[in-house]
Length: 142
Image: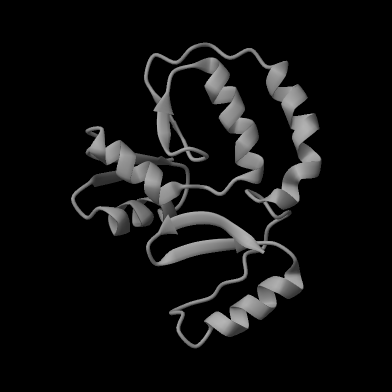
């Protein structure tokens, strides 16, 4: 069992074997405000995804990436880059490394971001953004 997402100071997603997660959930239950079992298709963002890495490397290697005109913040490192080689490496690393959502948001704010747009239905990411920094503006588009 390992952390898969560091969403906020109060929200961490864990990934791993069902029995291990069940035991950890039972131990955390008395102090946790909420424990939710997510219905997902795999133990994403954890070493349990290692069997998929080689195939994914081939897909990334054979995909044509163009250099971005703006920095890309990737959750595997929480930092910005415009280097295609680094972007590709970080995409592969994201399979087996935790999502550093909080750290990424804090870095973007430190670098000057003041407004975040969530694309798609729902407002989950906007809610996380507001928990991380109440001063940022958020909007959603679908």
